[in-house]
Image 1 (cartoon, rainbow, N blue to C red):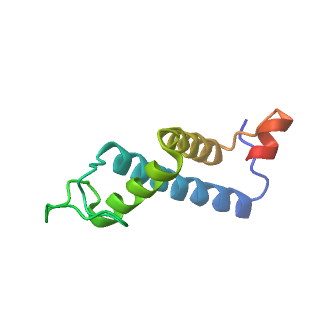
Image 2 (image 1 turned 90 degrees about the horizontal axis):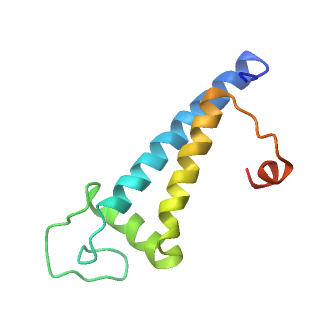
Image 3 (image 1 turned 90 degrees about the vertical axis):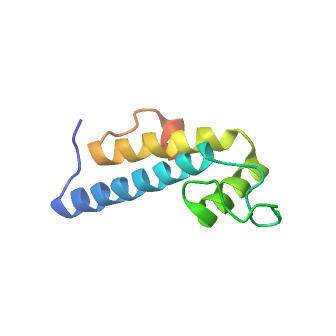
Length: 102
């Protein structure tokens, strides 16, 4: 289950997993706190206060991802979360199709 190889690969995969875990957490929280009236790229909100938890960055991130891929952006954040956990724990994909995707 925990097959990293060398210490260098362990550190690389562990810190990449932690980075992707943080990225997926920020992405998911910005999607949850998305407000359509927030100021974002291409949107002029009437409010001066941004309701998104991560401010202007979170507002832009959630607005662009919801406009481009819609509700699938929640699944993308879940996919990033699962891949980061697999990287941290050193779990390898057994199936060929999953190896091609990840």
